[in-house]
Length: 144
Image 1: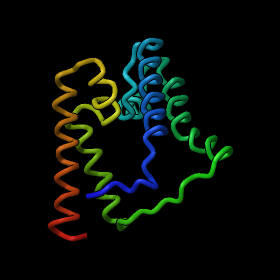
Image 2: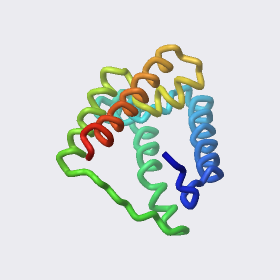
Image 3: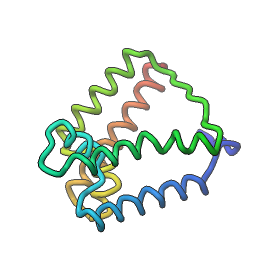
C-alpha cells in the first residue's frame, strides 16, 4: 500500500477534525446534548415538547453546509463505485448497526470517546474493526 501524495491533505483534514470537535464540544456545553446524528435525526420522528426546532436546525445545518461551501469553492466530483443494491444494503446495515449499538459513528466515535466512555470505545472498536474486515474481504478476497 502506498500514499497518493498528490491527494494527501493533512492540513485540511486536521482543520476539519478540529472544527468537528469544536462543534461537538460547543453543542454539548451550550445545549447539554450529545451531537450524535442518529439521535438528533431519530428525535425528529418521535418528538417531545420543545425538541423539534433545534433538531431541524441541526439537520438543516448538516445538509446546507455543503451547499454554502459550494458557493465559494469547487465541490469535488463524486465517484461511487458500487451498485444501487450495494448502497441500499449498506445503508440498511448501518441503520441496523446504529440501533443495536445505541448510536452512530459521530455519537460514539467523536462525542463518546471524548467523554472517555467505555461503551463508546467498545462500539468504535467494533465498527472500525468491522469496516476494516469488510474492505479486506471485498477488495482482497472477493476482488470487487
